Figure (spheres, one colour):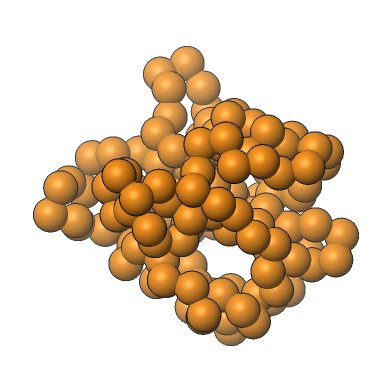
Length: 132
């Protein structure tokens, strides 16, 4: 089982920050919410915050966890731990990702995400108020 913390980062304009995976990465070219594997000495929320800093050079605050999602890929079982997070400071930079975009929740459907994200994308499409 691969434990991954991800952050659904929103700003004051209710936009969401998404990232495109590098082409040479597993599931390369797909879009995702920033995040990554947890280190042994950190909580899931700390992991999501650290990954946002490493991948994008920004500071965030995780405000609320959402239900975990487990998905079986051919390369292994993944447990996603999503957090609603608020952008605190910094201008995003593509440090550990191919590129990034600030989008509205309605625009999520126009981007290809890994299959494990399907329940999360459905939740966001149904109820944008979870970002508040």
